[in-house]
Length: 108
Image 1 (cartoon, rainbow, N blue to C red):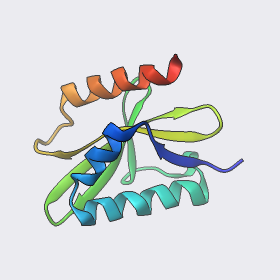
Image 2: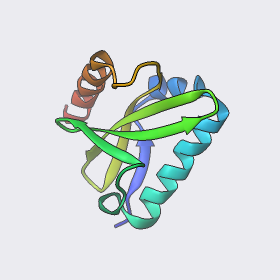
Image 3: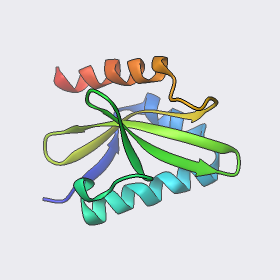
Image 4: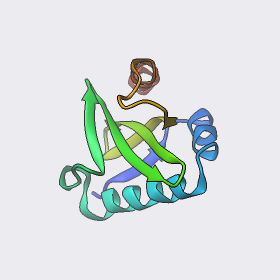
């Protein structure tokens, strides 16, 4: 079974729509890489573990850097639960907490 990358809901789709075009394109490239070679074979600088079940896809562009926070689900699925442009060196704790909260929706 191949890996699939998808978003949690329309809220996350809107967050992606707010990203600059080059960062959205970078997300598509990372997602295609995951689907082509499998998530276990993709490592830094493309993805990095943050906390608990939350990982990040690292997106760069002319306007700076962005992150797509994701969790994995049954059926070899990568579910993106938060996308945003990063303003600080570290990924903000509030964004990680929001990703963890949204990930709980998958468990119910």
